[in-house]
Image (cartoon, rainbow, N blue to C red; front, top):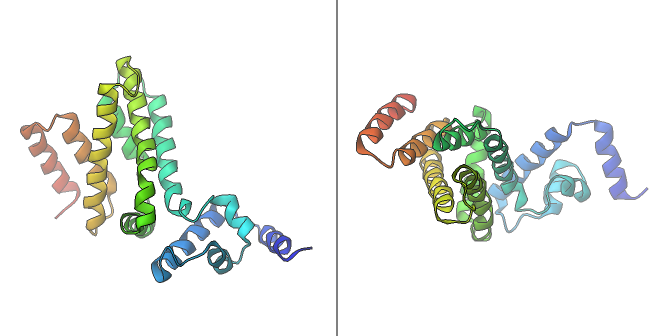
Length: 218
């Protein structure tokens, strides 16, 4: 048996659930990225630190960068699935706000990991350059839903405007949440999307801000 095959078999004998193995690899990779830098860390190092083969790493992640983007891709699919099942009588922006909130409920223990991912994406040039395609997928999930509601192609003016403005609002929410020490990301997302849905009406924003300050004390 080859050394790599033995490592795979040893991993199987340990009987770790796939989700646990994936999370362990992700946490180890994030730690190495933080300690040694994203560019300097290799897949070989991540696998060795986790006690698995590189083949095992590639069962879960296609590239080193996908360690950081995998959860974002899951979020996009969660939003897409939620919007696909929304009843027609739910207002469009309420549906978007609810879907985004549901896709971004995290346990408090996961928050440090998420903040680290976002910091790396924002500060590592190679990751920042690749962000556009991932944000485009998020935007497309929203614009496709808006297009269905409006009876228009998702790439036409209004669906595209809704998708891009929702993305901008959520990125602002992510940025402000990431800069603070609290854990409730959904409060930021809800406040940003509520303001967007209201057309940034001053009275509506004032009410939303009052509710936001209650849920996220300053």
